[in-house]
Image (tube, rainbow, N blue to C red):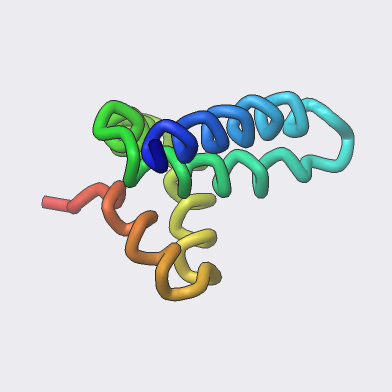
Length: 87
């Protein structure tokens, strides 16, 4: 039940975040990252999608690194699950 609730909340936050990114003041980025924090631990598919996006989009990876550095400790753990390991 908690997993489903996290997926619903995360999906809604990501959706609102995407819409918010299109506004002149892009507060949607913050909502999108909070949505990912809900989705990554509750959905392996979402974690793989974030890893793929971080590997393909350098701007997205930079934003995620900045969010990881500034996030509180429990959230850092969640965001670090999606980091791309440089070879």
